[in-house]
Length: 146
Length: 153
Image (cartoon, rainbow over all chains, first blue to last red; front, top):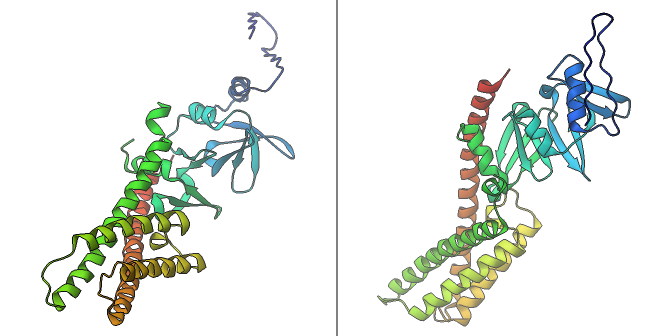
């Protein structure tokens, strides 16, 4: 990416971003410029929206597209579940299966299932299964052993 | 880092195998107990190695059937048609092998008692797993509350 920086002595400061595709780094720059580092950008049927990580109940990856589920919206975001986890670097977000990430802070109840799986009930009432592969890591996370 | 966190297919397979092995041991001991009591009542103070070999192999094979065909019904949360079918089939198989292997000298009432005993064993195992899960639920929810209290922003 080519970066042009020009110092000015008078006039209003401005930033122009020219992009071909809205990639996660561009998205991040836009988020920083919008004045709230903590806000994330995404798209709904109504257009572009901003939301905070606290609003997220869970994320799901479907056909290489990542959807964020909040209490009242389904938002499509750019990137992958992995890139989201890396960008957020927040242990409240837990990868609970190959295609899902849950916000542990928005879990209302947990239920132990057979074959060492865990059923997580989210604030919206959805049930998300934490698969056996990830269940032991989830237990460690809750205990603070991770 | 990826390899460290994820359980490989081999590890997942091994976990399942250990589960079956554990199941085989559990049912083998339950069956052996019934067999030994029967022998004691008959005044026989030794057990046939051949019968015990048949028992352990039967337990292994039925363990596989339980896990792969009937969705591990003795550990299941709900008890529906598939689980009831699994229960009947497995009890039927154990009873059939006990007849073929002549574990109870062809005594029909003992064989019927053995089938009823297996039903009790399965119900007990089901209840034990259910209780274990309830205790686990409580632990998990306590840990969750603690985690949320520590991490709430």
